[in-house]
Length: 226
Image 1: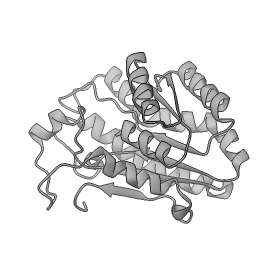
Image 2: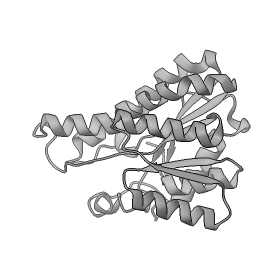
Image 3: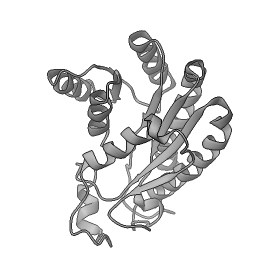
C-alpha cells in the first residue's frame, strides 16, 4: 500500500520521501519509481526509533525544503494468538510502531508543516478496527486506537491549517494480508480483494485541495461499510 501511495503522490507532482526499515526495500522502491521518471528520495527508518525518525525528518527537509503531507503506513504484528496471552514486550512493540510513532513523527514535523500554512496527514488503520480478527487482538486494538488518534489530532491541528484523516483499508492484495486472507471471509458484496492503487487514490484525494474541507474522517476502503 505504501509503495502505491508513494507512486500516486509522485505522479501528482509531489517530491516523495519514502522510508522502510530495510535498506534493500528503500533501494528497490526508489529505483523503481525513479525509473518511471518520478521525483523520489528514500531513507532507512525504523519509525519506532527516535534517531531514525529524526533522520527521516532531516532527509525530507534537505531534499524538499519543507513538508506538505505526511502519510503513516508503517505497521507491525509480531503475534498471532491470545490477546491476554500477549507479553508486555509484544504490546509495547505493536503500540510503539502502530500508534505512538505516527504521533511522535508528526510532532517532529509539525513546526515545518506549520510554516507552509496548510498541510495534510493521513494515518492508515485497518478494517480490523471495526471487525476484529481472532488471534490478532493486540493488532486489532492498535488499529482501533488510530481511529481515535485521527479524531483527536484533527481537532487539535485544525487551527493550524493542518488536516488529519485516516485511511481504513479492508483486505488488500499485499504480502502482509496473505495470512489474513486465509482465515478471514470478507462480508464485502464485491467478490474480490482490494488493490493497493485503490487506497492510493483516496490518499491522493485527501492530500489535494479538493479535500480542503475534510478532516477527522476515518475513510473505509473495503468494498462495504462496517
